[in-house]
Image (cartoon, rainbow over the protein chains, first blue to last red):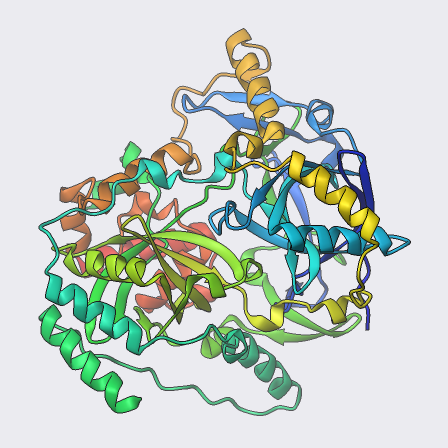
Length: 258
Length: 335
């Protein structure tokens, strides 16, 4: 099975041009429902209605409004907004390159695989160059009327574009003060570190499954066969009291399980 | 309590915690609240007609061409084209994971071992309760060991995989994508990796070296599109063109939380300060429920969760407005 490309572009930096195809790295596995009219089981339509007159307003006749703090509405026509849409382009422009980890998880949004568009010689040369220098690129592109910034990085040996959040969307962690209080007890700190060591593991993403989704699928399957469903029992836990005793007891417990 | 229904003050617009619960670290438990680390839309636009009247979305039956009320709707799963299985809200509710207030850190993994591809959404964790000691202890020891705690937890009726990361003494929760949501290069159908042409690789390397910087300049990540929109809005406000004055007795507007509000709340909560101590007390008196005005800022799902906690009958068929009314009524009874 192969996945269809969602967009085509050309990676550009210096004199270099690498034509690529873009693929979503995420597969939507959510179970989607449609809203139906209960009486006749017809999928419903959504319309925009003027609440004062109950009249339906066709989409083309709609505008947008920004509501200022004062409650004043600033009206924007569809044409005005269309004029603010960035010029379409096929270029994935690299603004620069950075050492790995210079762009961290704070910025990550959605990953896209890249694949060669046409010949794969340049595509794999790019993978080699990125790998050899241990860097990632900072890219800018316009896709489907939207501006994107992204990190060009390698994933399992393949170039990937990780779209990033814009600066304006990020809460600057530098401006936040961590919680303060009296100095931490060195002995407790030692115990906490020891507990972390004992619970040390590899990240094994295959171990985790979206059980809710699984249960929805099972429920749907059972429904179509007219079966009844089981419901699972909840779990409870006691709350710890004294931190040091709790840490010591936790370490004891972790030892028994090891 | 009851006159709160009519008074609306600025505090209802403050960003609220997405989730509150307990992080379990061995037998130590620390109460925390979860706040978003991203704010997606600083300039939300609303749909209006030509005259600037705010429009409402309304469901219509395609067959009868008449408007439908919320209680006339039902979820359907499309088995095959135009063939639906009806699924009642109660049936979906029955398979929801059991409500849990806990993130149980049973595993600590090297921070660098979580590939970027897994990160989905970022939150800040702020300490609740009387002391920040357990919070600081966990943050410091995780940072010292360069480890992230990995766990699953339940938020708003969904199960999430989460990595708890300490950074500069502050704990973050990053929800992670499940493994089977991610495609592999083989699934995409990418060609097997080959060695690149040596001359091209050299060319690229030298171009990359020339453009390599040491640090990320966050100005490069600025949203130009949003900036243009903002400029346009500000110009119009200044000039007074296309501006519809607020009606005198208009209901206060629900503005979406923006970065500045969120920053303020985070700053206070990280220091263990509650912005409105009186409000917090009152909130306790009314058990799990919140004041009516604050309800307006909740999503339908959140409202539904509250209605469920209050065991309000017929909640699955209620509209957002109906839920707010029913919760307000029920919480007055409790108070």
